[in-house]
Length: 238
Image 1 (cartoon, rainbow, N blue to C red):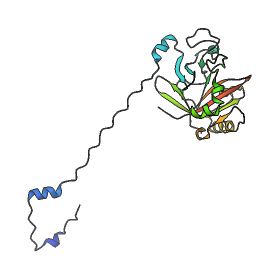
Image 2: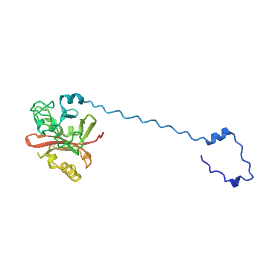
Image 3: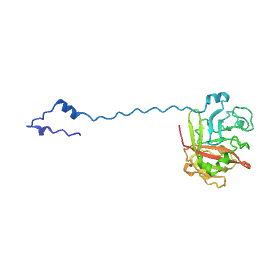
Image 4: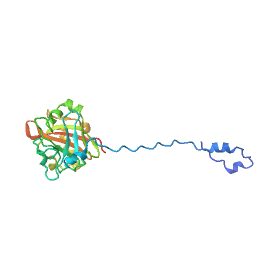
């Protein structure tokens, strides 16, 4: 406890009290404080995907998409020269009617755009995005499997579902400027108002401008001119 010093005038004619050096030292000793524990540096991220080996096979591979309890577990590719190349080429670059899971040059390779669209064929065999509509038009599956994960060499990105809907066949990144905050917000508010037997929503994770959204796009079952879109908001940011 700190005591205000006695004014000198009050000491006139008084004998100063006697005390030992030990007592004085005890009185003046400061209260010991705990030394904070040093904060441990975070462990460096190590991707579970061997991108080094994958890029030796094909340098166009830049990420990996996975959805728990599904067959969706594929590399993501982007051609630097032809956006349509992976419509009929495998992720190793060889010809394949199945194509690949791919993005177009509208999107950057670091997943940093306001909206990243990944395309995959609706294959009758169920490969690629063949089961995407079957999975996410089911309300139970939609609720119980809310996370879509993308691995990059630098980070694990977890996206939380907010919509799975039938949609028009318009080219989303061509017709919409998602860098415009107003257009971004208007687009996703309109999505939430879609009414369809195959649509599911979780408005808690409806994105706002400044968020990052992942869309999975495939042909709508029974109508190749339409699309089935699964939309999710990034919830983990490296």
